[in-house]
Length: 478
Ligand code: ADP
Ligand code: MG
Ligand code: ZN
Image (tube, rainbow, N blue to C red; front, side, top):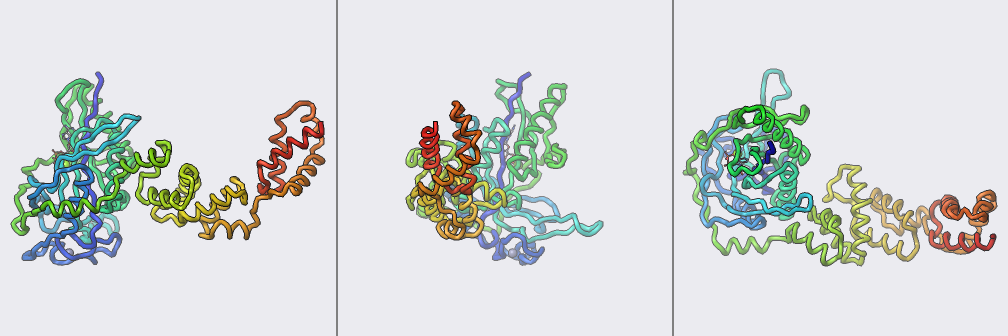
């Protein structure tokens, strides 16, 4: 039996506001436990929440970026459950009236572009964190994160493969980072994703019973966890079993998903409108004002890079995957860099150096102008393309400009014909046998001679001149 996977994702994104959703505490990551708390976010009785307007603005901004309808009227609801990291006994969330509905994003996998529907985007507060390592039989609760504004993006069950799921998360991550509403850091948990997955016999219309997988904090794990879970479900069905609707946890060490708890239903949460908060009314003036803050989205920019700069798709993909990368590129082109030349250096050497240090592009120590100045040196023939790699790495590591490095290290390309000629003659004398063989018709030895000259000049000889000179002299000999 052939099966088809059906996947719907729920993405939680912490918003880049200064303060929490309903109080003035900071949302900074990594502080001493419980130093960013107040009576509101630790759930003291008698306190009142006050809405963070910026957070609402960020959700609207996201909604506009992903083609959603912005609700003129929405409200907060209490989602009741008991857990130590939730001192109030309820989470303030949204239920029947979210801020955004009915959007979509497009993803491309294996050359096929598909539209993935977005059911809704709502706003809620994050919970605290339980910490189980440290002291014997105790657990700790850190409430620094409690009350952090959290945006939940829910997709339609439109995704059909683990690869598409990862691509979908990548796309949304790029968008929230482009518009500056979330830093997208999956390791630190500021972007988290739960996956709902079921399988059905190919051709069947009805969906199968789904499980929900939690705890996948990288693109690789999303793919692996879904892959595992789809195979697990198919095996059960093939053996005549039934899928249990439940929440499962991805264990990245063992590479499996494990049952965590049976699936709760909405009525388990006893949702009701939060009586402490007024409804949210959004008028068109506000929406339009937020729309003006929207930057060009990754897809549009990618398309423009292809048409405006004549870049191959692969280059455009990488260069628009992050706003910082795209901006760096465009700055370089604006300063006179040849688009494909700039792209080659970025996709090759620059990415290699950043990856070596595991450094995000935002922290790129090199400026666009520095690359452009180096490209000018290559073009003028001051340095060879080969030497340029050394110069580039040195620029990256020291922050010095190319011309300074070239001077300091004596890397200027030798384009003086008589100087190269001396070296060539010397190489001939030292390699008489090879000269004989060349004369006897072994023309591929030209490369050998060129290599020897480059070695003797530490890569500084102008390669074009070396080749021409070698040809001239060798034909003269024979
Ligand atoms: P809940 O709030 O209980 O998690 P929702 O109806 O909000 O349930 O759905 C959550 C996610 O599950 C959505 O992304 C939706 O697309 C997805 N989903 C719903 N039914 C299925 C199914 N049968 N198989 C796979 N995904 C599903
Ligand atoms: Mg859910
Ligand atoms: Zn607080």
